[in-house]
Image 1: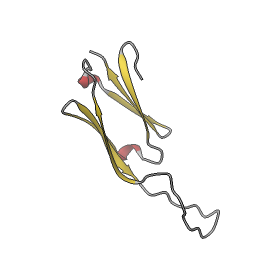
Image 2: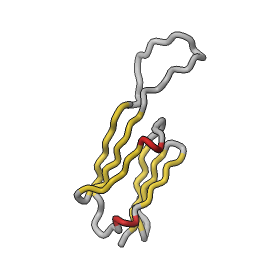
Image 3: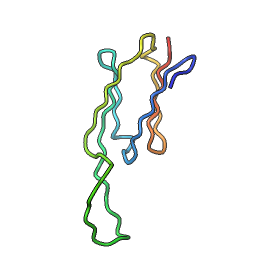
Length: 91
């Protein structure tokens, strides 16, 4: 997303704990990395055999180019309800 004063990146990280997310800036890129554990099966259905899973798990890394004119020192991140919101203020 883009507003008059910032860019906003939204990342779907359902199942990832906030303390498993790392955000850093490297060479004009924002690097988001972390770990999503494998989902644990609930006991409601008894013994199950997995056929298809659409949720990736394990280590992940995403690199996003930072647009020109961003105040890198003012970057803020918020994590709520499985979504990571990163605000990149324009200089």
